[in-house]
Image 1 (cartoon, rainbow, N blue to C red):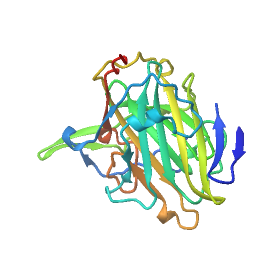
Image 2: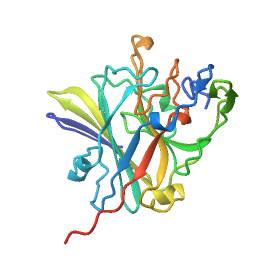
Image 3: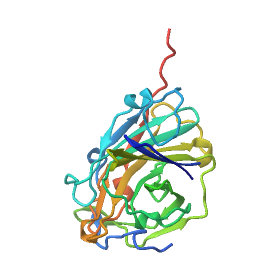
Image 4: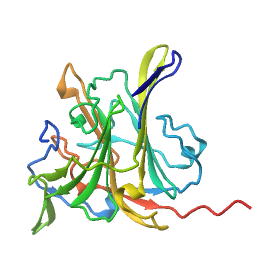
Length: 271
C-alpha cells in the first residue's frame, strides 16, 4: 500500500463468508420489474490512456454520462451523494465513483476481506445477461478489494397478477476467484485537512473475465451500489444504488433490478 497525504485537497491510497451483510435477503417476494422501468447506461468507448490512480481527472471521463445514486430501499434521495461513470477501451471496462463523506469507518485492509460489512462501493454485472450468474467487485475507502463470482438461487413464481421473484434461497459464491489483471485505486479528498469524500477508479480487463471486447450495441446487465456506515447508530447506515432494489431491509443481490449497460460504437478516427 502506498499512502501520500496532501494538505490541500487529496489523500491517496493506491493498491495494485457468511458475514453480516453478505447477502442481506428480503424474505418477501418481489414483483419482477419490467425492462422499461430499469435504467440504461450507454458506455462510451475511448482509446485515451486512463491512469488508475483513484482520481478520475482525465478529460475523457467527462465524455461518460454521470449517474447519481438513490436510496436502495425506496428510491428516495440520500444523505451522502454518490456519482459514477463508466468507460471502455479495447482492453478493459473502467468504473469511477465519487462518494461524499466526512468520516471513514472502514478498517479492513486484506484483499477479499468481508468489506461489505463496512463501507464500500460495489459493481455487479452479468456480461451474458443471465441473471443467475454474475461478477461482484467491491472497493472500500482504504483501497481494499473484494472480487468474486456469484450464483444466485432465486426462484421465479408465477401468480395470477404476474411474476414474482423470491431471493430467499440465497447465493453460492466463489471468494477464491480473483480477476487477473484488475487495477484499482482510492483517493481520499480533503479540504483544509478535513475529509469531504473519496473516489475510486476500477479497471476490469475483458481477458480477466474471459470476454472479448464488446461489440457495438452489446448489452450487459449491471448495477452499482454504495454502503455508508454510521458507527454511533446502525439505523443510520445508508444503502444506495444506481438501480434501487426496493428491498427492506436492504439487499443488493436482486439481479432482476440490474439496469442495462449498452456499449457504444467506437469513435471514428479523427481526420
